[in-house]
Length: 512
Image (tube, rainbow, N blue to C red; front, side, top):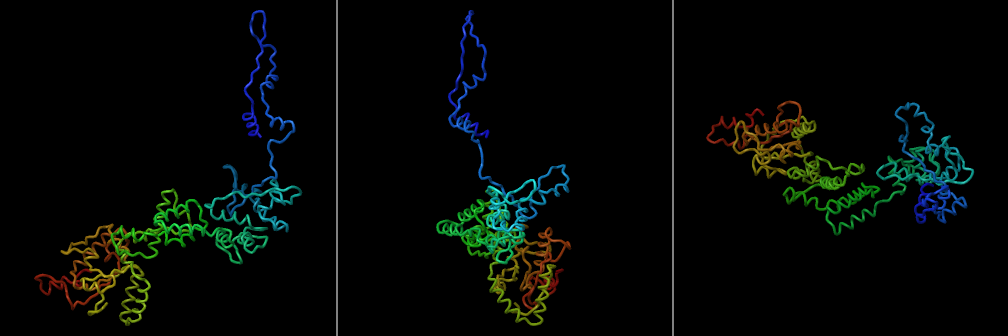
């Protein structure tokens, strides 16, 4: 009412007015006698036609019909309770308003009145009235009210989807009833579990139940928008578009849109990695591509004060996978057809002899227990997670799948002595590769000088000292290593050395 009077006074008022009275006397002085303040007030006050009509007919300045009732709701165990700092918590919890809220009383009323079960929560005030002092609903004898459920942001999560259900469900008697009613088109839910039950199936979240009921959008228009943009735009633009959809809270089910469009969003990811790692033939598996795509989307969100962590249904980029994808050496070692390797493994493992199977089982046990191990598989010529296959010679390395020479893989120096170490920097790609390696197979080991193995042992213990616990000096810092070869074939070449010097330079003479 005050605001309406303010508008009448200052918008509809007339021009300023003043009252002047001049009285003459013998001294020619001007005086004002008998000032009538009431008369002056009416003379100087302008009354507009609309305000005059309101005053004459006695109209109300403000009224509302029908009345609008704000309906409260909440998730189980999330009812808001207001209390002071000095209030006793037991007394607060025993208040009638806590034991029976408007929301709970609505479901209790559905258990009593049959006609109540024919109404949704929003329709309920049309036939029932909320009595605040008694904390209960009662039949309405005259008139009606309009119920309104306050708006909820999609970021709230389950509360947002509960609001959607409450606008549809009729006659629930408990939290569990709300979902069951919507799905079966039956009236009168009785509990919270029923809220998440659709066609006899109980969903984990209210959100999933809303989708099952078809109450939420399927986000097809957003999927089509990304597919259409893919025809003319690069991957960065598509990822920016997807990030914009997330920030604007436009997607009802972001994980569904991600699964349908990730291949478009991953455009140029592999190309960019090949440029960054300077490897034109680099190949990444599906999980690595997805992970890098999510990482790029995360960077866009971070620049806009958001993050993928705000969207709990979306995957989050894995740091270990990112490190692997950004490491050319690790990417190369993981670049295999896993299906073909599995088929080949199943074929070869069946063909193992009992003796070979015993060796295989012992080595794999050491790998699975992650306790390290050092093995030498002695055999004649022809013995053939990340497993590094290395050989002492270039020709032998060509016979191994993904094989490399040991000096190349471990940066072993050409000139060796008893104090030599490998030329590996602590944070280089080579070191990261060895960290992720579970098994190293070194073929034709007898032809390498023992100082090469000892140099690798010293380097691994030095580099990984901070990453591993236990014995201060574990052989090869606990990595499982399998040496293979035949001591009757080529041994280390020692210039101007005799039989004793050659044997002394052999792996069999090393502390390893």
